[in-house]
Image 1 (cartoon, one colour):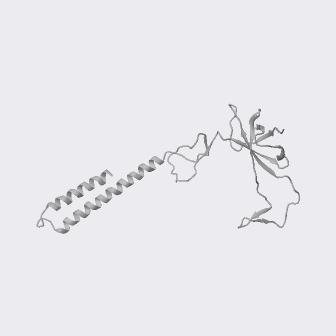
Image 2 (cartoon, rainbow, N blue to C red):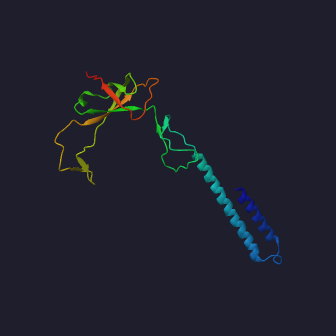
Image 3 (cartoon, rainbow, N blue to C red):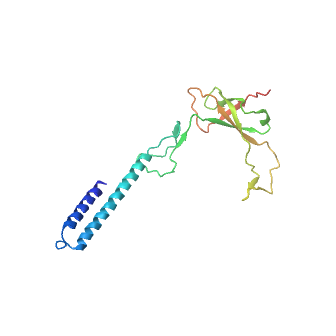
Length: 198
């Protein structure tokens, strides 16, 4: 920007100096060229100022702030790497939203209610964590059907004749994670729901 500013000053000075000269000292073409060069320099200055503003905006956007507290994992970045907008380079694990996804047979669902207390055992700890049933899924994929373009079921001509109870996802919220217990997404857990039926 500073170079463009200096070039503009030089071109404007030349244009005003040539405009002050009489028609006998300088041709009309040279006077006109000086005015054109000054106009070009003004345009180049405006372009450089716009580029500087874009660079400042990009610099302000280069600071990445997490939307919530948590832990960064799968960081695929090193100093000096270029990152494109929308390109995933890391994952943020929100450590305040850990939950357990349990898969209960549909025959056991009538005895499970939202709010029921749950004990959770992780393979990495000896003691149980406390939680409660947060939700029970209302649908799973039927492996024997494929939806067509109109989202209607297309039933395969062959069918599994041995009918096993389907497993339904039940989401369990952990009430409190004790100190020293480190959770990672994808860990294996065993659960026990205490039936609080009237």
